Length: 409
Image (cartoon, rainbow, N blue to C red; front, side, top):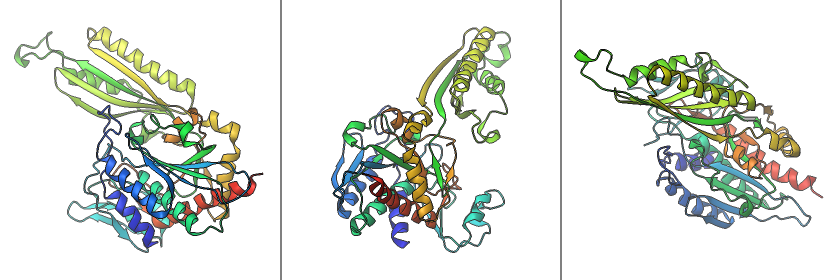
């Protein structure tokens, strides 16, 4: 357990926050710091063909140790963290033998992680939890996944009696801003299929995800002295407020669950002359996804009629529901389910209310379901991960490799 904790903390204390305003890859140079560390670590545990490219994609290979022909499988995780909350100076806290009560994350600011609000905490009574100090996110999304993959590969190298085929791993930048697979070389990676280790609660196994798009609404106003503004001023901030309230109030992340889609305004900046809304559009159903984009276009047309063409809209698709690419090769989901059951984990098969690199990779020719990494409350100061969940994820990865070899031929 301590080995896992030490490895995880060595990753999360490196700031790798991605930057949605950058067009470079990686979007922040600081992501290279952890990428280079991972290269050295993969070499040190005995992985082969360890490489990093000029866009910070880290790859490595573990040769098979069995004579019969076995499919090549891959494991993928991302090392960037979300731009939604600060990731500078992460100071993890270790809570041993969690007692099911409130956890005081930060005494100065009275920030409390409470099971009264985050009821999933009660699933982990008696576990060792790693939390934030209440001032940053933690980075278990997805440095827990990286920890689990590296540790699983290390275990297989130290235990050659466990028979497996060739295994590929890849760690990617910029997943949190929807670009993690943009420069992924599927052909060079050379796997028949792969798994992202990027889910949340222990047991999660997912092969459906949102269709996703990002949108930017830009509103141009006219600033006039307020004493003489009648019929002259166009206040971009006020129009932005009207636009936000015109969106369906019940179709937001805090009002939806399971397969229900939403609009989510995640950034706003503005002054009288200019206001900008950044939002995301999500829906599992393709037809509903297209309707949501059309609703935005219709609202912009309506507001432009009211305010003399002061609004522009840019919509960009990010990724699509991978279900259609996974169902034809559903045995790869069944292998993961069997692996979980074999190590005492109850599979929780449900759609992802989000996306992973695997959603894009599946459409690029690499079928790629998603497996739990163990963390909760991603992208904020209440993020935590039970170490026991990380241990189980490692066991699942090892068992997938073993079962794939057993079923082959």
